[in-house]
Amino acid sequence: MEYLQAAKATLGMQWDEVAQAAGIEPRAFKNYRLPEGSKGHRNMPRLARDAIESLLKSHARKNRRKAA
Image 1: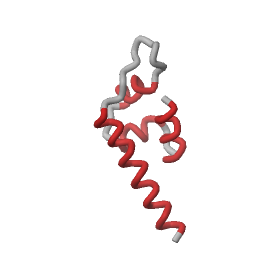
Image 2 (image 1 turned 90 degrees about the vertical axis):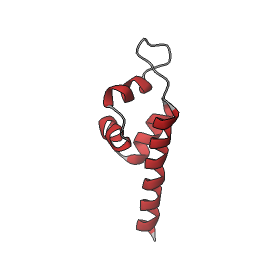
Image 3 (image 1 turned 180 degrees about the vertical axis):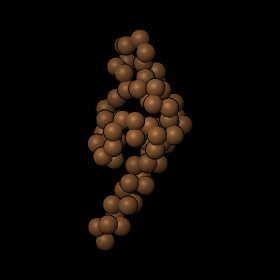
Image 4 (image 1 turned 30 degrees about the vertical axis):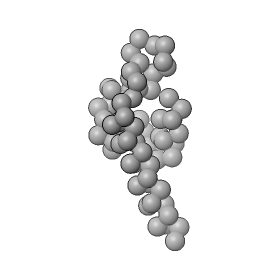
């Protein structure tokens, strides 16, 4: 959950925007964000984590170009 909150803050997007940009269904993305003990929680698969990492890397590259 902390990982996803940090990614959301870094990207400056709303939850559904992050899900869409990563190609993840918003409902599935919500399940990844739920506390581990809650009924609807699902662990985020590697493919979804890789999609988030790709977004973060792309965001970082864009910010480096703007700063240069």
